[in-house]
Image 1 (spheres, rainbow, N blue to C red):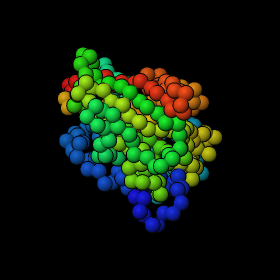
Image 2: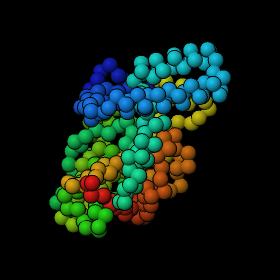
Image 3: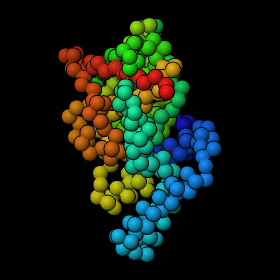
Image 4: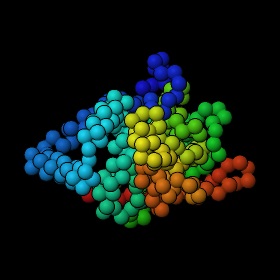
Length: 291
Ligand code: MBD
Ligand code: FE
């Protein structure tokens, strides 16, 4: 859903969840990459998932009423367009853990549902850039300096940082109405020495949509819907493995109980107030060469 979609007038959070479904459909078919998966692999994975479900039903003596409520809820997740949200919040972190277990460079974490490729380039030739934002964009101005290097220590002058984050109200551009298309989304290529300096604003803690099926589960289970404040990045350089990460801020109460289980101690920014209302932080990235 784009900002010009007249059908959506208020920034309901559920619309953000649903927009992620639309977005996912516009990307190239996820089936392509698994086209050659042997039947044995599909059989094994499907059976293991089902067996885990059977174990739960037997051990917990699941009733017909509970089974029917599950059926209704699963239907609602699809109708609300919240499968990307559900999967990225409650499943992706383990997939990420498995996928990146042998990396020697930077720790990463989950992508989540709100990445959009090809954000506008904002850096000058020295790797200094400002993320697109509205006049008076809320949040403490943040200057983030770092360098992209290889695991052997060499700076990577062909590297780039793609950055995206929510605004102070917890909305991502292109997933909530009323925001400029690329608000708080940018591509920042590094300078000849591999360094970058990105100017943005510090985001606020973030509540995942509570007005759809995911919210219904959260309420029924007595959970909370919060993620700590975070800045998403994809860091890349030709010949190196893509790093998908999020950066967090010390002291956020939800660093300990992120609903998406995506916080790692290695991913903390530690911005220092500069006395002029802005904060400065240094954090660089180490990329693993392609295998
Ligand atoms: C987000 O902004 C996010 O980063 C994740 C992982 C899930 C829902 C919303
Ligand atoms: Fe996010």
